[in-house]
Image 1: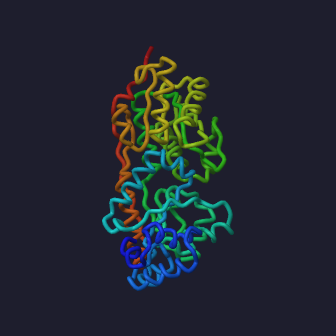
Image 2: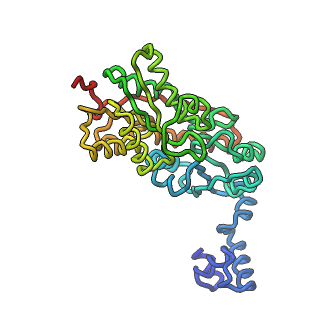
Image 3: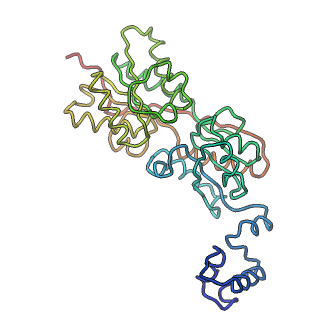
Length: 348
């Protein structure tokens, strides 16, 4: 921009205004700036010009199911994006957070399928969402993290059901039999409150569904004798939603242990129990999921999944697919990290 401004005899701001079609420069001045830029082989932010030269826009989109504001507050999403940007080949590529659309028509008008990005990383998007069909129909390179897992797109994930089994098996091994579960929403438009196993089984949110079914698998493996698992759904992924769901569950169920499908909700559980003067783990044990940095700080027992590594793998796979590689998938392993938020069931 500095070179174009110098050659055109205008300010750098004028160059920026010209490329953003701002009315602050006249049509004749804009044409002059474009002509100078072209003579210097500078495409600027002009997507079409850049595409004609290199066949690439130089941007990768990231799509998340929740609002963009919530995505920026969610530790797991932020760690995934950290992994994406750590891939060297993306050092000079713009990362664009793209909003999800709500209809088929809007799906086919999304920036993701109109050539405004070279490819898309999707995180935990519902398999039936219209953007999936739009991406496949348009041939836009895309990689799914966590969900959708079986729609034909390259996939990065973990065995969520096996990971949920690890969480619940740990609590059952400690003697807990009255266990409350707090999960993120199981369907679009979910609300705070108790959810039946049947609702879980028919949920459109695969990750949440599989983790909770893993809980029931662990109970079944022990014969279900005297085991009570009650699931409470939170309407969002944020801490406040978790606090509301945990408080409601604790007041109605009086559990000896709480399993959550994210560390955010596990931290919310610790906060609620502390406010109610309930000792952890002497009275109630708490286990989370993800092993986000705050988990170690709060001495939280949790299931560790390699979030940053998942982001790196997704970015590398996307670059391969942009270059024409065939579909691939990678399933990472998880590990139960035992800290001091869980302990044997109280006999008092």
